[in-house]
Image (tube, rainbow, N blue to C red; front, side, top):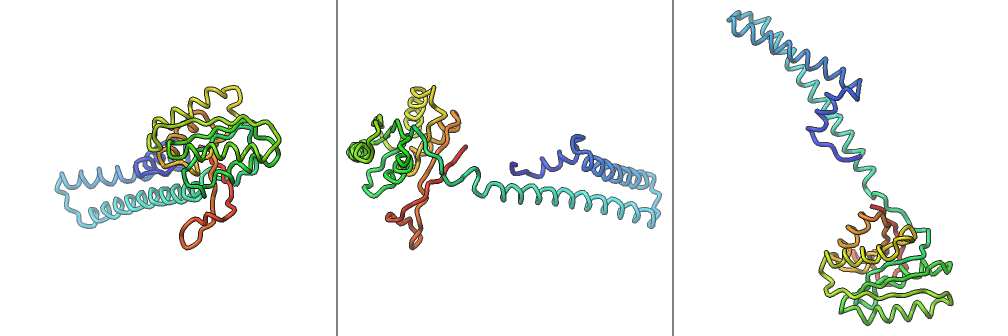
Length: 241
């Protein structure tokens, strides 16, 4: 359900596909049309019957107010409904584990990558891990690779891809697409974590995931003093765009 503007609401009233509103709209427009026509005829003929003119004005004003009221009620209903449905659109707690995880790596040693990865290690389901790092976070990506191998006895294929810049949306997009093309036959088993990347990395990931229909995840940390508590356990949230 998308937001509706006034023009769209007006079109709905004139759409035969919504019979009840269409009939109401026809009646109101007919009353408005007849009232305006009669008032115009009386004015042109200079037949100044005060009582008749006043009646036409009342009819036109009532029909106009009724039309505005219907449009306002429909606009209010559509947009309140949109807000309720889209407060957290398609965001749910991530319960499922995925065989393929693609994750951006931060240079911050207290970033949330271990939490994001550990979830998919829980039932030894993780098979492929792609770590996307910038020059500033390359060493941390290598440390995470070692950390993962120490956490499981299962063979996990860990790959590190380096970006020239952490602030390049097209490059982040192309990198994600490159991975999607490599795993084309398993793309329905992949998820992308966008927690630790820069805003530009995340934007590139969102564009690629939207294009290929791949879900994303992020770590939702607890707030303390208005800021995310880096020591909190965190909760994984799944996003489908």
